[in-house]
Length: 191
Image (cartoon, rainbow, N blue to C red; front, side, top):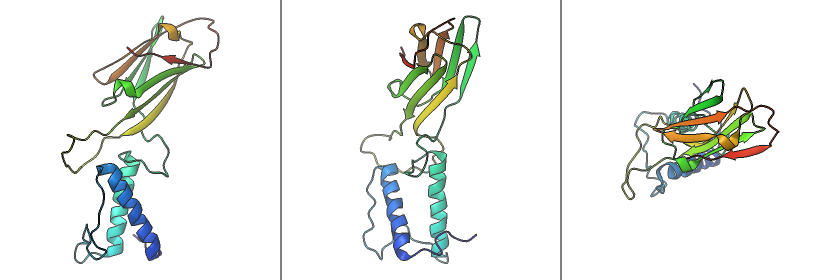
């Protein structure tokens, strides 16, 4: 596989390395510092092509972006979407959504035109302990903002809505209504 860096100038590669150091600082919260240009902070293993090594590091960084572990300035603003289910009874619509690790205060619920539920939120990366240095060896969880729009099968009464989050599962109960007027957007309170 040809490296995307083969036809790049030193200035272009330096810019990429600068971007990588910025991402490193955002992920770890620690300042990236190379002591001297001649002292590599991540030495290239002996016998490995430097451009292939850089390409490998680039692919790893892009996998972090794709998994949602970090946000790229070039990516879409919402990198993950929590799984949900919508259930109905004759009297109500019930929405259940998996939100493990999302704080109650980081969730916003609204209803557009009484038929589209909009759930916005953010799962934040939490360090172990303040002041404790640690390195992340594997990161498979997704962090960042999300937005989920769920079309509902019937009009509902937002004023009688019941929303709560227990054990990382949001449960929203919305009573059905007939002949409800249209409201552009209405907030739903969680208890």
